Image 1 (tube, rainbow, N blue to C red):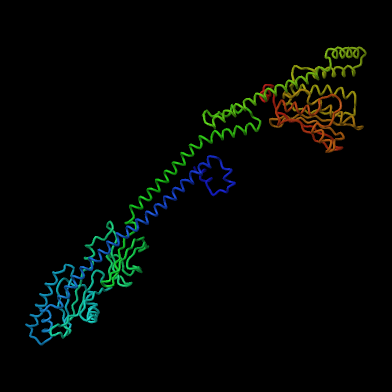
Image 2 (cartoon, rainbow, N blue to C red):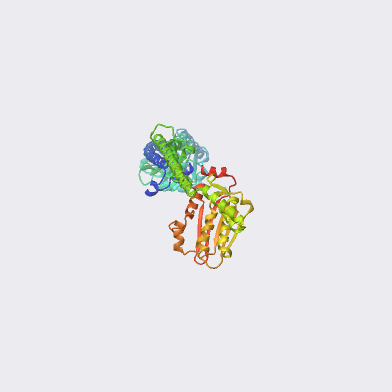
Length: 596
């Protein structure tokens, strides 16, 4: 799999052409799956955008309903403040409190105002407390304990109320996040004098109004309210309003923003009632947890299907490409000259086109191998016939009888040199024309060379300086008959006979590892590069009727293989060296295994 992935990189057209068929098939399937994945992702994106629009519509609807509910409650409380400000008892009590009164009258007025304020407290459950300040700054209060922030900002609230000339105004204090304050100036409406009687301040528990709204998305999210760019209410008490950096350009909308270190879905809606902006803030993960889970599930499922498809394609492609690769490997063996592919490869047994091609190829190679073997046997027969014809050129019985007669006469006349020459010549002839064995031991071949040199020494006497160096452990090694003697004969013919001074001929047979190295060297006139090239290619015509170098090289290759044979090195006026390397074998059956 990893190997496949490494091959699936950006390929040039030329590189793609050289890919194996299975990689081309895998690459095609992978591209097809990736295209499908691309369109699936686009489809998901379109679906998500549609889903976002629906979520926005629902969130905006919920936010507008929530803002209407909040404003309805605030309007109800605003009506309460109006009734308090226009209440006759409170109006008269405030007018009367400005006059000089006894302690009893002051106590009575306080009780009347407190009772009235207490009656209004129960009309709305979200009212925390009602505060009434007369013209002298005296406070009349009813309800629960007010927040300390009210007294810290009392003058700010009173001044704001006076500025509105009796109209209600809603104010928020930055120091108080949970409450909002309704304040209005109380004026006397008797005889339409509109005299300033005091200031009414009502603290409202805004957080409880918001708390009862069903605005959260599966238990998360919160509502925030801002006026302009200032957030005066945030439902979540753990969030500092100053950290909310949000702005609304339209009357309503939505966005996805990174807020407080998390991604949030934010909807907003502006209200003309008090120039407020309502914000619905929900963590993005909470809204889209299920959708995201489905998205990842689909992607994981698709990846699983893709991997399974690739594995199936690999398995399927192997059933197609493995026989083809097997066929290619068999062709490479045939290219190297090995036609016995049926012993190494098994033809495909399938009945498809690849199987038919497989079997036809192996049948063809088998037929070619039979033809080559038949032709090879014919060539062997021709070579054997030529060799036997060469051996049969001399009538052995006639030669043996003649040589025996000469040897008998030489001994009779006490001619020892003639007798030795005749005996050596007879030994050479008997071994040269023997057809019993074509491969002999080094010891037998060396003995023939020694007899041949014996004859040549009688001819050339001191001009011939012959030396023979044979390792003891190579004497039992086998080699083709008539290999060394023709090389010594060539050294005499082309070296000694062309020289006046002494000619040194050295023969050495040594073992090097698993090979036998045979060298024949002379210090004759040698050859230049041109003549050496003709000799190596077999184009130079040889003297006499002996076995040429090319014939020796062919026989060695025939017996031991094409990697063995004869090599010639020569330099003008410095002599010639002929080298032969063959396997070190002591038994003929080993050589037979090489031939077979």
